Length: 325
Image (cartoon, rainbow, N blue to C red; front, top):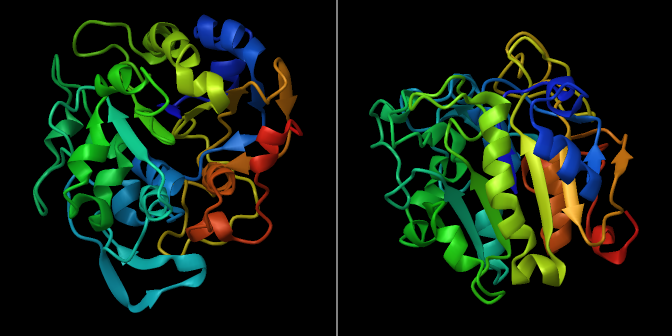
């Protein structure tokens, strides 16, 4: 799973998209989910939703510029396992798909470009110094959702599972060393967030497309992908002014407007590439990040976390590998 940043559906997937490798070569190889939406604004709340099903709160909506503990209200836990309160680093009782996979005896890794030090995150209570990128260090904590959960960062396995992107090439050499689930975040230039970038690159979809054209062929040629793999390329959100939503998502208990000025994070689209997915096709079913989490959990035979288990949500699942999608 590769995460890109901040682009509306038409900008990414339309005929004038600057992402020519993504929007021509890769698009022909996969199935485009044309009605796929972000769940909020800004970045972090979308990433948190992708791996935990937790909905936005004021701190995650502001990208947790200060890396503070999640402070629960007296009510504790709401419907569909929603932690009630606000803050950044969720208590150990709030789980992620990483925790689920570990418990199920499966493997996972988050590959973060420019992370350098494994499991890198600010100290609790301190400011996040990665908000401002530096040449050679464009890692963004806010694009690495696993480090916002005590269930991950309090474990010594965090350093084994949340690692620099350069580890991926070694891991992909065999099926035995490739994790069952790989969550990939390019740096803030190569994910399309910054434009221009602090190192002089153009950024935006131009640099994101260059990253994809360099790295995706390696993924598609890897033994694990060839065996039974699926590549998901998604974005976190549309532009900040685009706030439409989908998918019968329940009301977020900690944020009146998940999209700051509206209900959601806007229409972004998501591409699935797999030998079991008919190439060059589209799917108009409404999906969002909660639906993607639900779908991944279905594929791995896991229960549904947070809003991934809400009624009315449409998810795909193991049928992908039965050739039915």
